[in-house]
Amino acid sequence: MSKVFSLICYILIAFFLSGCLLGDDSKESEDNGSYSLISNKIQIDSFPEGGGLFILSMEPSEDFEGEIHLSIEADQKLNAILYEKSLSITKYVSEVEFYPDSTIAFGTFPINIISRHGGIKESLMLSVEIHDPIYPNGPSTPYPPQKFVAWLNEGYPGMGISPGIKWIYYRNEPIITMPGSSLEQTWLNQSWEMTVYTKGPYPYKSWYLLRKRGEVLPVFAAKRENLNYNAHYEIDVAEYKK
Image (cartoon, rainbow, N blue to C red; front, side):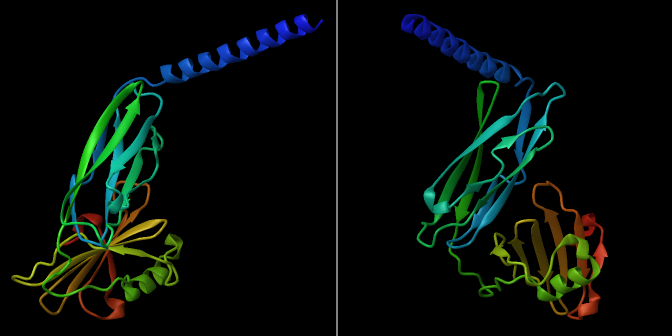
């Protein structure tokens, strides 16, 4: 009796394992077609305790099926984070966020994004150039523009951007001092990326750009031509910096 029971158990285990293997084969067979993995930037300038963000998007061929699986290789002192490690036709955007350590050396640091699909492995090479953090016009504020946030909260409450939201700050563009000073800064929260470009000389003008996280392109832009709270007004995204 025990021999018969053991034989039955052996048959059931073998059947279960063969089903799992078939399931894996069928899943891999779903990975058809080709794709391109594209980054909005290939190289970003930053500094110790600065930061930056690469936006990755997957462009599939017409016959694409399945998913691509992403992984990241980067120096630990970049503190790089890869979001959305699986991309498909319906979920095709990921991000690489990094915050260089205070002790990181100056120089070029590669970031290798590895993608796998249908048994094929590909690489997308990005880089971060770490510079001296000293800028001609001194440090900039780590806080987002409160008047703009209040204006958004009042006029566009559906965005969910209110004065109490916590933002993470980084700046990856140098200050241009001639003929007039200009500065571009970026803040992140869980839902939005906010970029603000301010240009002089006085009276300063500011442009604001909002991109929803998980999407490639900005969805909202605004402008302010003086320091008056009521001077903000919505513009077309294409008019940013114009």
